[in-house]
Image (tube, rainbow, N blue to C red; front, side, top):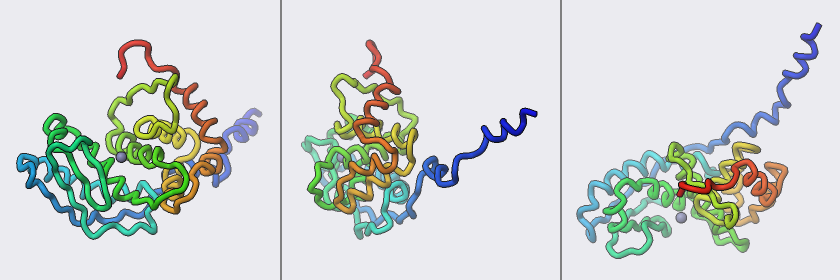
Length: 231
Ligand SMILES: [Zn+2]
């Protein structure tokens, strides 16, 4: 007698609803030839070779994770290793500059290769909206939530943090919003940036909430940072 009611309760949501639980991968794109310049720091050679192999493996995955249907990869990517460079690494055009000093102190930091390689794939045009925070957030989303997801995430200090803080805070916000509301969020934001569009309406379109509303929910769901320890 109770079966019909149970069946009603167990009915699946409409088919269109199911899409939001699946990540919409783009087609993979083969990694361009990678050249290595270690002339300024010869001891970087073994690390550079491993970074090259990692990039060859991950470049197609990064293309799959973003909206790269129209993306034209550069013919070559150059990795150059410098001494006395203040930033651990940065990407410019089709070149990534690595700090040899940083790598000597952090030989395990292959995650930065994935972050900088994401910038090569992003190759966004100039945008009249303020979107630098989102560019860095997406690069850290690929790094911290797709390349090294087993890494224990740093707590966020919600008293001072904002979803526009870029890097890991934005990445964690994007990951939470994707999981809770729509897996297509990051690829859709990436597409906005490729078209030099305002990305903010995409939060509302895909999740039904503004970025500010999502951030308030994220705060409540994640809770305050631990009083002791952490960091
Ligand atoms: Zn960056």
